[in-house]
Amino acid sequence: MRKAIALGRTDAGTQTELVEALINAAGGLVTPPAQQAIDAAIAADAANPAARYYDGIAKAQSGKVREA
Image (cartoon, rainbow, N blue to C red):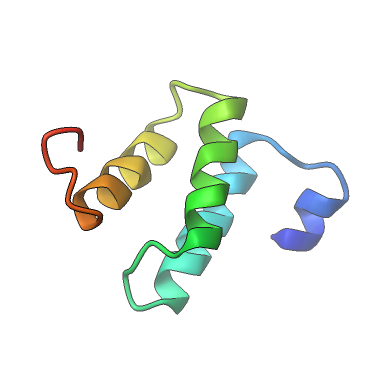
């Protein structure tokens, strides 16, 4: 996914696929690189449901449960 993004595929779908891979590789934790991809996905499409879902997971994991 990183190669696709480097080649110009910066749409929310590609970003969220990267998020999923990074979170799965980290055993379910949202790492800083995953958060960067979440932010990029939201910037590309603020209404993307997968990006919003992972943003909520990230907020919950960081203790911001009410924002999640």
